Image (cartoon, rainbow, N blue to C red; front, side, top):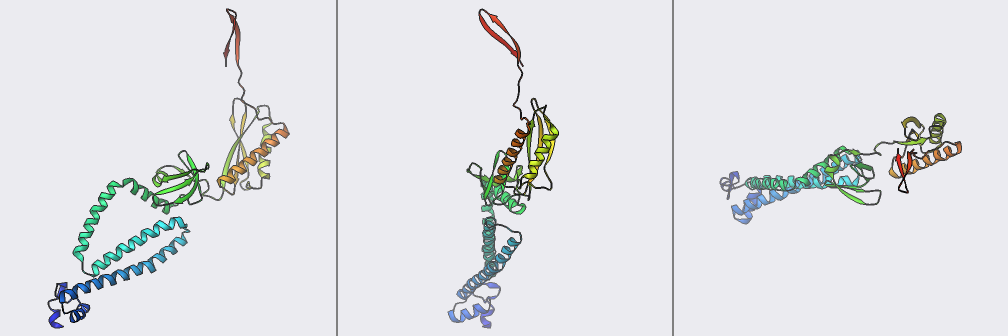
Length: 307
């Protein structure tokens, strides 16, 4: 053993890299083969140990962290995949290091860096959307099932991935939206809070009783079971139009989804309109007054009209 140990120091071929190499050399009768087999054994053992730690320790800890943040299933899936890829990469790196394949690992890292640079230049849009997807997961401006509005679009979020978000419009169209379009522009999430404030302007005639109309608007808001009492409905005179006086009603609902918002608002406006009809309060049509005169030229009647 001592005769074998001396020339095999420092991992040189024909030298002893450890106890495993000594045992293998005695059985195989070749120091170079024994050292190679030892490196392969170390490579496999290191890979399995690191991979097992990642698979049975890191992944469960990650899932617990997701549970604490109440991250939904669609958001978890890509993050878990990235983590598994990272564990595989670390396991391979540790295995190469344990097997003393340092030169190979350095060369591999150089090739990977050059490849990453080339891929990065060719996939700038994809990378931008990927980074935007990470920010969506971290900041959580919306979640699956939320009703969101951006630019001239609106709909309910059906799926969130690291590259795109899929939104179902209220016309039942499916929009596949790059994540960068949702992070680089103003995004409105009306259902992020527990309540939502709605507004509607009721127009009444100039001869109608503003105080009585205000009372009716507030009373119908108080009567509706799905309009909250605190804060209660309020009314402000906001417009003096060409043919009507605008009374803006503001009220809050507890179920801020698109379907509930449309239904509750429709029921409320209908109730106020019916009360206005009962009380004789008019919702006037736009009125335009025309002034002018008539003239007869060559037996043809013509009109000159001015507003």
